[in-house]
Image 1 (cartoon, rainbow, N blue to C red):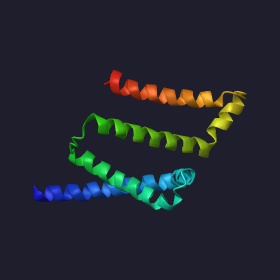
Image 2 (cartoon, helix red, strand yellow; image 1 turned 90 degrees about the vertical axis):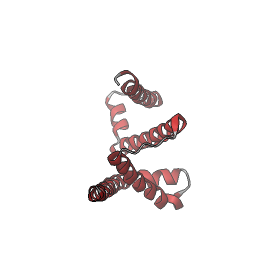
Image 3 (cartoon, rainbow, N blue to C red; image 1 turned 45 degrees about the vertical axis):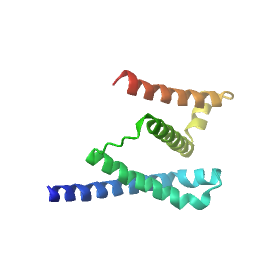
Image 4 (cartoon, rainbow, N blue to C red; image 1 turned 90 degrees about the horizontal axis):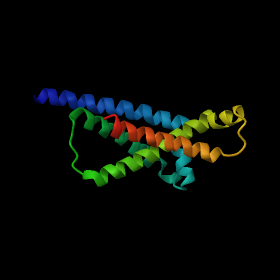
Length: 138
């Protein structure tokens, strides 16, 4: 039993480190962390942001492998959902900006006004899709 737990621990930390490292490399490649740190005028904490993302990957993998129960209740779930949604939105925005998909899309459909409404519609569609996934299609 001890050897099994030791192997699982090594596997979990290795998998978490690999996932966190590749995700951090992806985020660095598209420039999400430096851009957000620059916009919020906290560029001196960029390394801390990267370390927190890497630590989150490792801990997330450990929680998934060991199926830890974290009894923090609904307030923490709401807070986690809020911050997870903000991060996902920033990541999607950075990817869209990197790929220049919105300007290309707006030129193709000859859209001159209303781009903020398109962005709001995309965000609302994402929110509605997540809501349906979690509450309707359990």
